Image 1 (cartoon, rainbow, N blue to C red):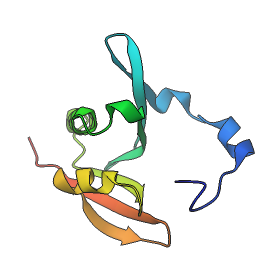
Image 2 (cartoon, rainbow, N blue to C red):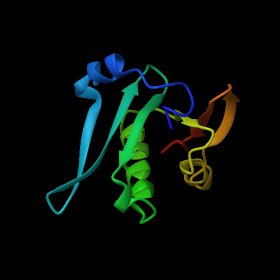
Image 3 (tube, rainbow, N blue to C red):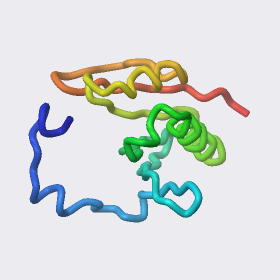
Length: 119
């Protein structure tokens, strides 16, 4: 999706992850099935990226992963989660189903927000 929209920058890609401490690997039965990266701000959590191996998409892992991220936000007493998603990314439907609402967009991306209920 990056190549088809904003363009691929190999040099920039080789520098990732710039903040490896933000990345969490996701395993199933000792097999790496994906990863995610989040950034905590004073009043919200930002999902930088979620990546799942293609064969594990559409099987509930994304939902479970997003619920896990929401639990992280709650333990930190954060009541908002933000993310950006490419307009053509089918994961948009998952985000909307889980309560994320579009709040802004540009040519390529939709910015979404989820408000978490206070504990």
